Image (tube, rainbow, N blue to C red; front, top):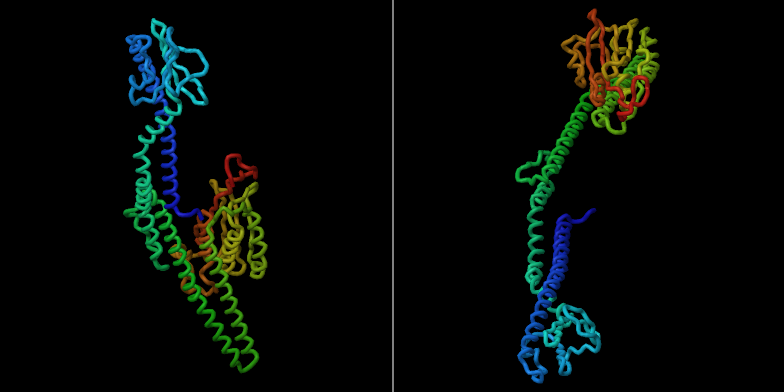
Length: 457
């Protein structure tokens, strides 16, 4: 689990806000410190010039020990005065023990404290130094920066609450959508309404609606499968029961043997119906996915012919396979499903043609596709019924050949799942049936079996 989306958004936004505030405070302090330094330097220079002007008007012995207080009342400035005729005069906290007087701005260390000093002189040889402690400048800059940032820090909790409220409001449509889905009954697969849904959530709504539609189709398919299975199994099961009752009341061995034989025939028919229903259900549920493999249809056809040959021989039917010379019959698909498709096509032909007829399976290359044709010399299917025989359980009226009506439905479903086409037609002379299947060739191989450099299987 990734945790609460709301918490992630709130923490991310508040974290970003705090980071931005810290960066703002950092740069504000240094910008303020730079500005304070400039202002202080100007103040030191102006104070030194004022002091020199004041000293020019005083008698040499009239210097006061509180001169700076008189000149700049309330200011935290210190000074040193050097005259040619008297001893140096300094403020109490500023008395550099060493170092000559230097004009202009200088940074010095006196008794472990840092000072910013400005030196100036006049034509009479009087020299003055006005100084301020570095920690005083830093403290003043910090107070100014704190004063500037004070409203921001007061607004921080309010902004955090505002962010929380906005995130909750922004996630409201998603929460309402979640609540709506939770309140649905399992049988309600109607699509969600996209109205009042934010653009960012529309793909989720579309995906959910697509899922609901697929579930509805699958549920309807399962319901139809259960109904069809119950309907089709009812007849053979009833027949089995009837024949079993006959066998239990048989008056002689011959009658009992015939009834048991009929039971076995009914059981075989029921088994075939179940097998074909399961095959059809598998085709409908298992779409062709990434697990599909390259299948050699020529080899698959040979195996199918060999499997069906005993039935053909028993009825004197000529069952043949013709493969176009040099054909690469590789398609991409499911081997079990394609084998079931071939078996049903050949089984359908063998089941409905008379003894002594023929069935031919042909493989040839078409335009980017493999062409599979199963042709027989049987009675065929009337043109008006060819589309209907592809529907499950459809059997032409009057048909006496046992069957479930599922074989061609299974073929059509398998071909569709492999993105191919399936058609039924009659022979040119009006007899027989031609079943044509077209399957896309595997694009990972060329006709001669070499890998194509620009295509993937």
